[in-house]
View 1 (cartoon, each protein chain N blue to C red):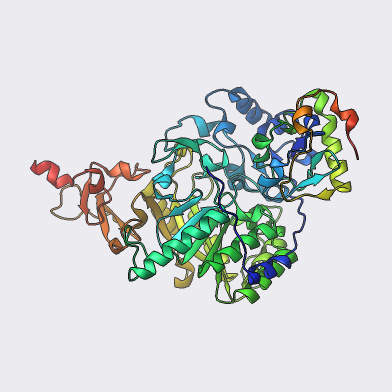
View 2 (cartoon, each protein chain N blue to C red):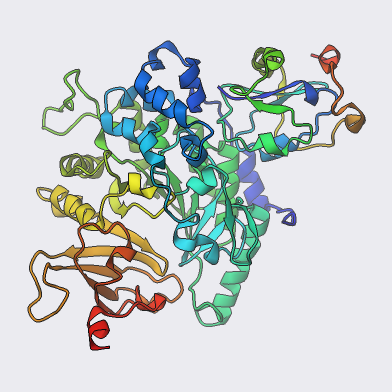
Length: 476
Length: 107
């Protein structure tokens, strides 16, 4: 990789950046199962893994089934303190031998490298995703960026093999400007790819909130200067270390807004379970307010409230539905209700991706849909905005409906059907909202589980791979 | 709980680590760098870029390197933060790999 051109900030940008202060944070991170094995952790953490759990993990060290080769273990004190009293949070954060029983999966889920014109950028839509850092304060065991976090080598479209790199301001900003210039000259569409203007950038990784304020500010300002209208920050820091959203961070955001008043910020947070932000009584029940709503952890609520006080900032939650963590309609109902009440929009729930080791985490697609649907019973309309999404190579796809009734006269629909709706097509935006209908398969955990029962494929989720309709197979 | 800069940085100070650190947790003395243990977020980005192989995870320290854990935490409190890469020390190549450099550490 050649070193990108040095990026020269504008005067306005420089003036903003000079005002930004970094602060120091002590997350009290514990990294590596070795520390738990050797007892080199604070006393109150020593029983976080049981002796038998540690023995089982230690047997796998340096074998093909070493859980840390797939995903290093990492936890903050804040998360540990909540997880002590929460089995779902323990499943999220503690390594388990189950993870490496079946290592089937894609090394680059969603073939993201096909959509990466510049190192560290995934450009699929009018929204681009950038990797700005390759770690988080703690590690979710089911992480679908495990290849980035664990610094694994992936094969690129040109055949070369290397770990996924991070985006560089000096390389990304010229790309955005050039893309948008070509789009403008060509009447709103890129002459080759047909894509629209890059209006929105999602800062991801890893978790951008582990970066210092100055580093985050440099990204925000450079993106705003390049004409980006909305910037997203994808973060789980509200769950891992909510004190990161401190005075110095908010002060930086306020100065950013003064400098770039037309740029909107969307904080994309990641709560999987209400245990991550609600207060629990010693008997394990949630602590209620007088009106029956539930009490939040003080620092998490403070962080959310202070962000929401700024009317140019939105907060949206999105999370995968993962076995043993949140495949629980009651937990998801409470989570959606409490998030919305506190100003956090419920955006997507995801089916787990086909990452390496996904069979330990994913619930079948139809079960995930049923769990979300059950969880939304009893919610008001505004609380039930979240949809179930599954990411197809073509683009973001909704699991729109699962029926129990057969469709009369349609072979393959005897047990009911599942309807996929392509929300946005990465390569070809006009395909929005086309659908694919498949016969039900309660075992399917990925698109491939329906290869033999495609009934209708307007969205071309299957025909793009040469997979025919079931009825055509019969005719042939 | 962190990465630790060990002896082979002394009199070399290549500072490639400083360039890749996402949280700017390196502190600079006259002829040595250290990592602030509370600020390090254990991303492991610095470990492979050190030309002197001087950065080690605190779980992987050899017995003779263990004294550097304390040295890093002490000196990080005394020294100034360094956030941008600079030229290595003039005789870095000569000193890279020389054993017994701890006696030359300047505070």
